[in-house]
Image (cartoon, rainbow, N blue to C red):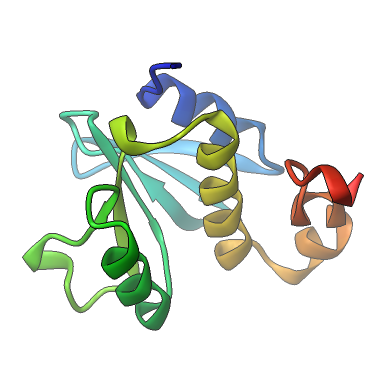
Length: 124
């Protein structure tokens, strides 16, 4: 089993179109077109991504060992993901791409339609 860490998050995030890394709140954050879509808290055991609240509730209910929300982020549209609970790098990439798509402007979504499902073999 592959150990997934914060460097994997960084590498995949920075490979997404027009993504930049910027420190905020003493932690790395990743942004597209100025909008944040990933944060990596300083203990680097998890990361946070954009997630509509109705989907977040379902994710947490289905996989509480993987997804959670700290109390101080309950009103946000973000969810935390435990790195050790991820199955593989494809799952990590899918989560990061989904968050990127929520923050990216329409021009980037149109310019990079292949990001829809690069890890889905049926999409190739």
